[in-house]
Image (cartoon, rainbow, N blue to C red):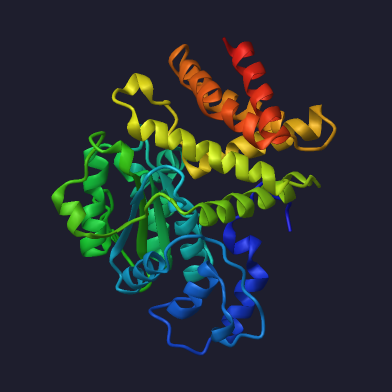
Length: 370
């Protein structure tokens, strides 16, 4: 197999998916590769009560009901919209669901201000059109059209970042389940095969950028993915994703539990400060998401590997945290400096060396950034 920087879920977990498919005796909707129960097991992991001969590890950490409602929506052939704050795992859940249902999570459209209707329908191979005219052979199907033709799941990331005309082009696809090609006289309709559906994601912080029309909202089932507030669950997410990153970079480095606790506590403290702030100037520009925690930890690990003694230390972690979160100067620097003096310094005096090293590393980083 060709080496990949980041393998999609259906490749990474191919052996696991093959095994689940081989033991799956439950009814399957449409052309699904796995039954709804097995899709849930793949995403959330197995338990002893499931009676399987093989343990299936948990891959997405969140409320079981969100996953079940997402699976039921896709089984009904309705569009699924996963909406939530940055870092809540919307895209990862969408990828896992697509991998389990149809073994293809790569039919993705990325929503941006530059996304056009062609990106969700079709475009043309200009050289072939000039040579032979417009035909199905000279047409370039979008990932969504390809998903329709194959009867699989297509994905649309950051839907609300696309303009309203692009969003509206999805309405007929979701309701009529076909795309017309007016440029052709014959073979000019692409019908969706059974099993086709769309999983879209939207950032709740983008409200007001390009709000969805009421017509499009009616064609999606909404599943709101909340911010992880349980410290234990968040620790599991950070640990799981960090272990993946370490394997990808082929780094053998241990993350001490005390440093993971410090990282989690720091983000909890900063979130609490942001919640009590009375103006935007008193809040960090960062969303303080779980994804940003993972980024801070990855940065610290790589710095320790390449420029340290291959041991993750509190001071390095603090430097990565300050460098990642200080996006505005001087506003963010002032907030972080206040946090170091008002929260970390008293904790260092009370709890000892690890918080003390974290305080020193944070001060050095602030001084370098100022």
